[in-house]
Image (cartoon, rainbow, N blue to C red):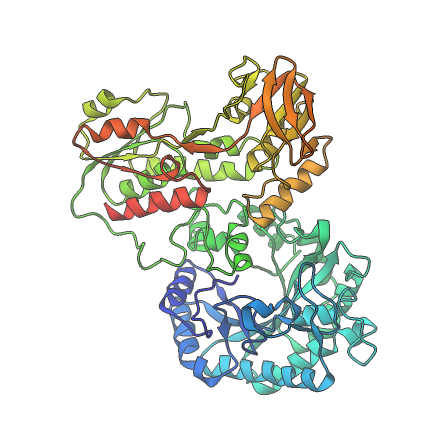
Amino acid sequence: MGTGFATADGFVTPALLDYYEARARGGAGIVIVETTTVEFPRGIHASNKLVADTDLAIPGLAELASVIKRHGALAILQLNHAGRMGKTRINGIQPVAPSAIAAPGGQIPKALTQNEIALIVQRFGAAARRAEMAGFDGSEVHAAHGYLLATFASLCSNKREDKYGGTIEGRSLFLREVLQNMRHSTSDEFLLWCRINGREYGNDDALTLSEGQELAKLVAPYIDAISVSVRGYGSQSLVNYPDAPGALLPVAEAIKQVVKVPVIAVGRLSPEVANRAISECRADFIALGRQTIADPDTPNLILSGRTDDVRPCIACFYCADWGAKLDRPIGCQVNAAVGKERIYELIPTAHPRHVVVIGAGPAGLEAARLLGLRGHRVILLEKEPHIGGQLAQAAIPPHKDRLKPLIRYFSAQLQKANVEIRTSVTVDRQYVLDLKPDIILYAGGAKQIVPNIPGVDSHHVTTPIDVLYERVQPGKTAAIIGGGLTGCEVAEHLDQQGVKVTIIHPHDGLAKEAGSSERTRAIAHLSARPVTVLLRTRCVSISPEGAVVREADGTERLIKAETVVLACGVEPDNALYQDLLETGIEAHMIGDCWRPGLIATAVADGARWGHML
């Protein structure tokens, strides 16, 4: 899992040290440091990637290995070459590959010559030597996903007619030469394994499972273990971001059946699924990536039986979508401390205060949790009969039950932090004054945008929250005004109930405000249902019969609908905050009530104030 915390030229930084030390301290037996290039800058696919192509990197890598090993974990450095995943806009160089075939959405790469391949083989060996000199216990070679070594193994990208092409034996030769060189460049005690695609999906020439097994058998003599992932193309591009925990286990199991070296399984493995996989001998090791981003203490908490204290990964792919894909440092929707581990160290307050938090959405929940843990007296007020705010609403549509563990986590943690929770309360100025707080944190959230069109106040017009909370009974037909992520999810929810749905959206694509993976997944789910989508179409009025729309060519027509749902986005809801300012009590806005956004921005606001007061 790349972080983007290195310097621009690939060296270790304090943020990187803190990030990996937190994961080692959290109880991991092995910490695999992110993709580290053997050839800078041609071998990187994003900015601020670690390098191991120069002796200048050794001191920083040594410090990194040291902070990991001081907590009892093995330190493994993952070595990689981006290949055709590289980008000229990032490194100024044409990417390279086995053949001049572009990655989906990428640029045409240069096909490597045999002399260039030999040089890269030497680079991997030299990088492994540097890793051992720095004190790392071993290296993992990244030969999976869409990077250089993986593209040599796959007919999708390798059309060579020399010794590095053809059968799987030829296509794996580059990888085997890399592993052999690394073996010769390091001591017998230095651990070495590779990460491969057990199979690929979504392309006629995709690596088959039987080829993945053959690949594993061919590399097994050179390695101490093998990590098994997958790769998807086109509509299958999300295959390695599975909805269901353990979806990739069958591939790892199939590889395990044909090799004697230990097999490492990956792919959204919950503690329950992971334990079962080990007990059933479907894998030998379990690798946790995104879950340790969400909570670096996951291993220790599981080992001590404190599973309720594990902050869950919600499989939203924010870490990928808003990190490397946009060439930015990694982040996490549920853990604002990622990359700020030292800043956000939990320190008890020396001056306990009485804090009233208004609103139990993500911002209010995180602020209340941290303030309670730090020793403040906290009262959390919520108008709904349950906590969660828009998080609770977002957990209702199909495929979104992955958000529910986060709500359960907050519920358990607030209780342990001695936070007093009052739900179903109508909060006004006097109610707050009667509580006599020292500080008010207003996390009132956002409200639905209501477009200024004729008929918008009709009785059959409603909002996503009323639909999802079943406060209204939808008719047999529905028109959803707005095709953002919320509109798409409400459409799927209504279709599942047997309602015939039409989405009316003024733009040329659905859910464009979402991250690329989340958007792809939402559209894939929606495409599997008989939902009508009208793009570049505006609702100009609402009649008793439905929604009157104007298409791009100016044509107006009626979309018949018994129910019209306004999914036009949200805007800050802070009227009460303005009133509270007049009380003279210190008050601050956090979350959507001042800047509507993702769960990440709300949690970040809550964390900031939770640590600051």
